[in-house]
Structures are given as C-alpha cells and as structure tokens.
Image 1 (tube, one colour):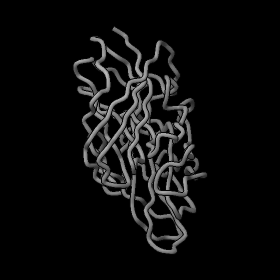
Image 2 (tube, helix red, strand yellow; image 1 turned 135 degrees about the vertical axis):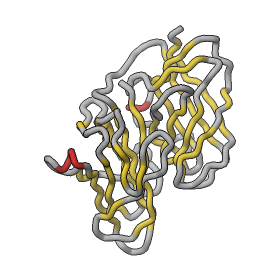
Image 3 (tube, one colour; image 1 turned 90 degrees about the horizontal axis):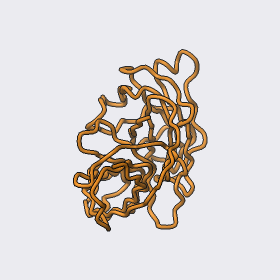
Image 4 (tube, helix red, strand yellow; image 1 turned 45 degrees about the horizontal axis):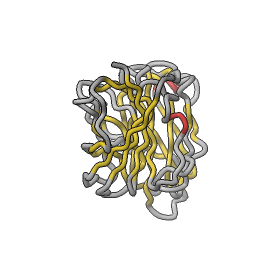
Length: 248
C-alpha cells in the first residue's frame, strides 16, 4: 500500500489548543492551517514535537463524527527523540474522507513562544510488511536546507547500483536538524518518508526500516530518487540510507 508524509510547524505561545500552520507542499493541497486529505485517505501515523508541549490534537470532519485524536506522548524537543514518540497506525489506519481538511492543534506551557511541529502519514489502507533480499545503500547530499520547510536534496550514492529496477522498502534520513525526510521519485505522485535523526547513534523507528512499511516506491537505476528534508535548521550536509530490493 502506498503512503505519503505531510508536516505542520509554527512558533506559538498558548496554554490552550491552537491551530498549527501546515507546511507548504508541492504534492498536497495546503491552505493556511489545513491540509486537504489526498486519495490516500487513511491516517497511518503521527508524531508531535515541541520543547514546551503540553497537549496535542488532530481534527477533521470525519474524526468529529466520533472523537478527535488526543495526542500523547510527544517528543519534548524540536526534533525527534531517540527513540522517537511515534504513533504507529500503519497496520490499522484511521479512515478519513478524500477532499476534507485535516489540521493539528497544540498547546504549550505559555512561558514564551516556542516552535511546535507535527507530522502525519497517509495511506490507502493497512500497510503490510514485505520480505526479500534487502540491501542498504548510503547516499549523501550537500544542499543548504530551508529551516521549517520541505527542501529537495539531490543525492550522490556511495556505490553504483547494478542496472535494473528497485523497490525502496525503508529509509533513514539524517542531518543536523532533521525532523523528517521523504523521497521524490520521478513520475510518482506520493512522497513516502520517515522521521529524521541528527546523529549516527540515533535509533530508527522500526516501522521505517527493512520492509516493515511495505514498498515505498520503485525506481530505475538510471533515474534514482531525490530526498526532501524537513529540518529545524539550515543544514548543509545530509545522509540518507535506502533499504532496497532489486526486482528486475
């Protein structure tokens, strides 16, 4: 099952829940605080961060029919922890409605403005793990990232792949301020991604490695993907590890 990743971020100072701005996105419709639910219309996971976080919520018309999602726990920092407080719904995603809006809300301790962030994963149904002969390939980037935005990052691979087609079945995204990363695949509509990390010793979220989130995307060896980072800072050095299965 395909999946894709979206983000919200804002510096705010409120002891009560307030809307958080959606991050502009080239593959999803974003208007102010709202993201319009894509054809991948099920909520497969979420992750909230904020140094002064006290409360979080996810709101959409479909959720209001029953109850909104109250978020706990979150990572009490501007970036994911090690391990991160990731809410994994990939095996049993929450149904939404394509075309409706979804938003995130957060509150913090109101001791002064601080940044809060949210990540949402969308799928079109339960995501089943895949197995096969998995190989991991390292790639690097040297793009200056724009803080608090999605930034595309061309990759240089450490090895030359044998000619053929490959399924991506996992990834790790690392830079000094990385909150998340996702893949841009030529000719593919979605942007599958994972939580980011800022150090070699940081623990991965198991869901995003070695086939546990199914097939992310497929690419030809002569037309590899780019990465796209959502970072807290203007990093200039990126590292991506891709878990691959050769299919042709």
